[in-house]
Length: 437
Image 1 (cartoon, rainbow, N blue to C red):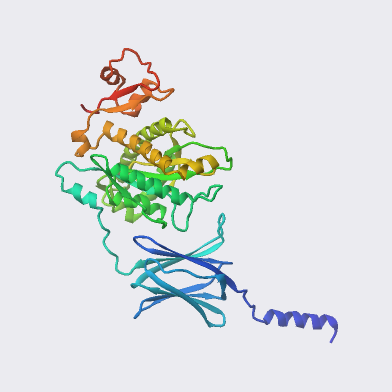
Image 2 (image 1 turned 45 degrees about the vertical axis):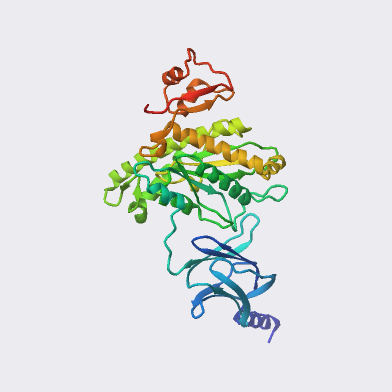
């Protein structure tokens, strides 16, 4: 047999041999407990094949990773629905993780590709097998007993959380921790206001899916959704607060998606069901609701930005528009507040100061309060009891700016403040007459 034939036969034999898959290292595991579910995130060195199943008596969840092997840091404490975690190798080419459970669960799983500072991840979301009815916040229960004078409800959303830390400052500050602290303060201040109730979308270190955030606000019949964040930029000198609402193009795209999904059309949008309407009428009704929502979002955002400008430097002097997923509610006015640039060392230091966070929360509250006192929703305590609000003129503001911000005419604004001119000086306190009175 010549050398050429021997080489060809050897090559053929190698092709026929089974290919041995490289073992994927299971590097680390983290568990986060949220009110509605428990999330386990498993870091792996590469994409993996896996299988999950549950066992009863006692309740357990089993995860088998094909060609997996344990890393040095594979330890996790039980949280939420998971009481404990153990692992082993039941077969030569299989690595197994067993989660001991406090109750039976409905698991959902998905793989995430590398992104930013994260590598490959396997995510398991564990939901209770028997879904519990969400508890109604205590203050909302109290409000429901007031005939004809309900409180205005503000949903406060602390950005990021759990596995998603958000921006990380130069000194290692996590955005998710700052947003939760500011949000809790803001909720406290809102609850101390007559006629207002706050609902926290996230009240712990766990992740809430972006679409679920505004859906939770809709479930609580919120009059306003405020998402709190801390910005980051490549330029470490960037500073100041910003206020965003949803862009018009993003709103149009969301409306098209909303109408295309059957489960959305069966929901109430602005108090109207769309599933029994033809496509043209449903689109018109949704457009009307969405138009009113965007207009209200713009007005409250102007109020909040004005308050933040009085408190400190704003990154830009106008409300910005962006396609943020949390702002896509069709019928709840929504805004996103970037409290400061966490990437700026000076602003990171300020955000870690409790007194500074309290001032930020107070500034946001002032803007929200000014908006609702200028245009209180019918049937609310504020509509029945609010008096004329006050406005401190900021540098560069005109009477026209202030009238538009508070939804009053310039003539009424002049009359309420005995003004003979449209010129106003910075620092002057103006009385804002209540709309409709």
